Amino acid sequence: MQRSDTRILTTHVGSLVRTERIIELNIRRALGDEVDPAELDAAVREGVAQVVRRQIAAGIDVIDDGELGKLNWVTYVGERLSGFVRTDRQMSAEEYAKFWPEQERFGEFYKVHARHETTLWIPSVPSLSRYRGHQATEYTNLVCRGPLRYEPAAVQRDIANLKAALAGETFMEAFMPVVAPGSLELVPNEYYPSAEDYLTALAGELSKEYRLIVDAGFVLQVDDAVVPAMYYYRFLGRPLAEYLEWAELRIAALNRALEGIPADRVRYHICFGSQNVPHTTDPSLRDLIGLVLKVNAQGFSIEASNPRHEHEWTIWREVELPPGKILIPGVVGHATNIVEHPELIAQRIVNFATLVGRENVIASTDCGFSQGWNSPRVHPQIQWAKLEALAEGARLASRRLWGRGSA
Image 1 (cartoon, rainbow, N blue to C red):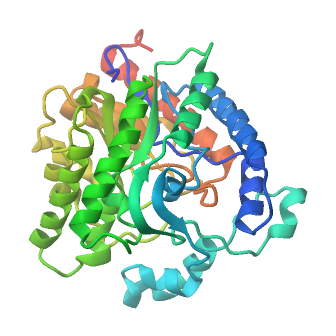
Image 2: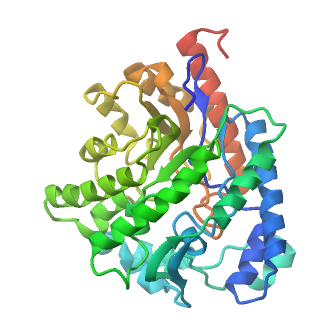
Image 3: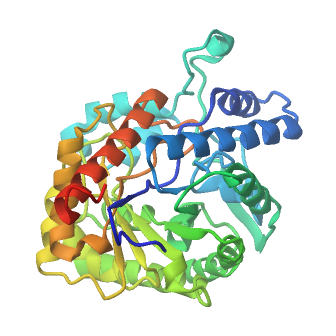
């Protein structure tokens, strides 16, 4: 991985709002219309070229394909692992609302939030207006019903698309996001006899995707949002030690999947859920950081501008970033349409750089801007404005940390 040796480098967490053409084709597919796979492949290929150019134009140094070829950050594996099958099941708004904690305090809010989250998102273009009001949830229609076997065609397509888009462009480095074994457990298991057996199989098969990406020359980003989220899904009100024991097994499984991959080709991402919800039951980063730093990665991408967690930058006064490691803090939010002021972004960057060393900080976003094709967290115009503000904030921070000529 590149370091911020002469200035603060910038990146983001990975997912970007899909292009209108990709969204339209996925809408048609979700509602049962016949979609020519070649047409979708062409739309993804064109979209990747577009978002690569826009990331570079915005001033982002470490870029990716926006995850445009995936349904979402978890169930994209449905086309990569045989043994997973898709069902017709859709989570209702009522089920989704009850899925969240804080029901006594915020139950009415979650009813409203759930209607938004489970309704098909439609861009404001006339050709798509006929699809408004339909439901489409990609998280709940995948299940494991057979032995898992990795099939590389889809990742090879994504690798080829990103390489083609990068050809002739000037950029610092490129990465590709993947799901962690512990987060993929979100997909129900109806085949393996135990949770441990399922986790072992997930780690073994995902390791094949990890190696293909690294062998292609890209940095591997492992996304693991479910491990922090499981604290409030399953362990709320129970002893912290029970949760940490559960999480330790998931970290160990991830490290098994990463065996043989150099740590300096890996960055590990955690967050506290991408949704714009209260987050009052999130775990503390202080409780998690010991586990996070056990992952065999060089870079650690951590949500840090979420108003429930921004104060946690101070833990680096007591927690030492291990030698050779890189902190990739979120200094720009992903879940609201407020565009951060570059001065605020610079302040956040300097806070981290002062504690862990300027060369050990790469400025990023909290999470992805669209974890699935149907879950944009902001309008695409806002997405690009936020990335431009991120780059400007990094330039301001660089001048303060290295001197005025550094940027």
